[in-house]
Length: 396
Image (cartoon, rainbow, N blue to C red; front, top):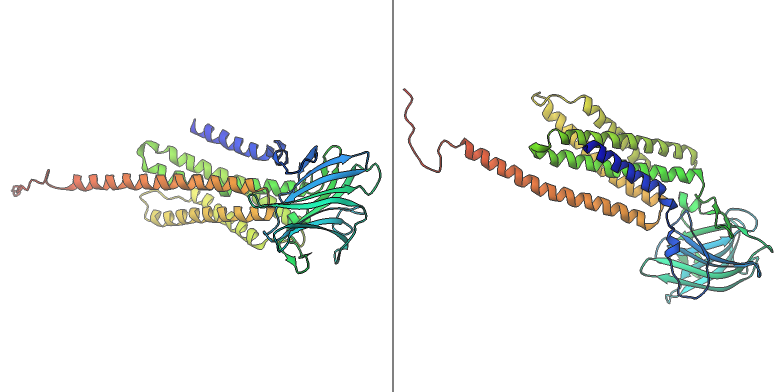
């Protein structure tokens, strides 16, 4: 019964994570201070960004609100249409940043090439430009009405980006070149809202998401749960041997899922030439090696009375705690690389915090139980009862 409950719980968690993208979008809950009409919106697949728009087919124009968190509070955000291609070169950009007086400025930039960014008029008219910044959620907004490059146009190539600083004179400094920054582009159908590229329907981004989910569930959740079970439940005689089987089930399941996630990471690395995350990669390799040692420990476990059992325990426990620490650390490194919506990081922090509180409570309970047993043991070994000092007769 315990095995089936844990198994179906894990299946439910993984299924919910994998199918979450089909749930209601975050952009549908966002509201604005103006009274403009925006009948469509999309959670953009990179950089935690969102786009709202209204297509006016009679005027061949589109009113947009682009929402994104700048890389730092003093950074910038950008949304662009590229009339000639699907990347940064050739894009006609709207860039917002915070001025020295705290107001949000929005300027237009013609990016004719990767080395040439010129502030000035775009290839099409832009009106009603303004910007906002929300201290509560750290989001910056760009409002604008854009005349579409072609009459009757309903599909555009969009490029969006965020940066960490602004140079003197209001010129945006170079943005990061992480995978989310490089993938923040794609086509947008203004009628259907369908996005192509940028990760929505992009196999590489799907692999990244699967890689992240598998590793977060295995190294970041299942392994800690297995350690908690082994450390605390075995204190209670009624839990023996159930705790051992639950512990083994959690760790073997975590290892299997983790190896799958590790394999997708190696595949992604081979497909991403020039993109390196050395720290994340090295920790992942160390996790795989340590976890493999743990699986080997299952087959090399000596009997309790064997003289090397003491040393085996040191090896097994030390390796297990190392996997937990490195696993949680690497999950946060992965979240930093993927840059998902902040709710994902918050959700993982909540899960780990709950596990930490459970471990702390069980640690206190365990010590109370152990100390009570020691007192009883000491009392049972005393030669006199109730403190009565009576001389025992000498043996004949």
